[in-house]
Image 1 (cartoon, rainbow, N blue to C red):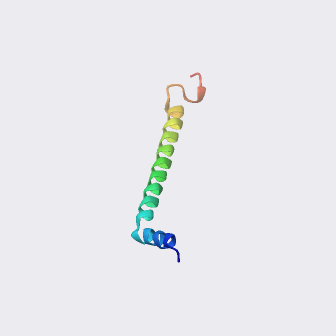
Image 2 (cartoon, rainbow, N blue to C red):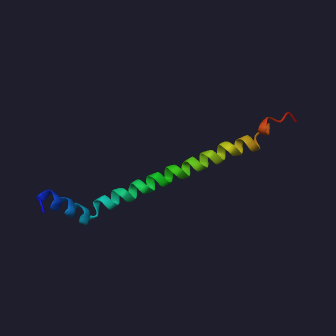
Length: 57
């Protein structure tokens, strides 16, 4: 085993990459939830607006 492999192994055992991966997963999840909320608000505005779906009533 080379010293580089040993350093990588120690780095993985320290848990640092898992913290970053968890943070990235949380960030992606939050962005997805925000996109869903924006999409619901956008569609809700079209349905619940003063003139829904272009009707002329």
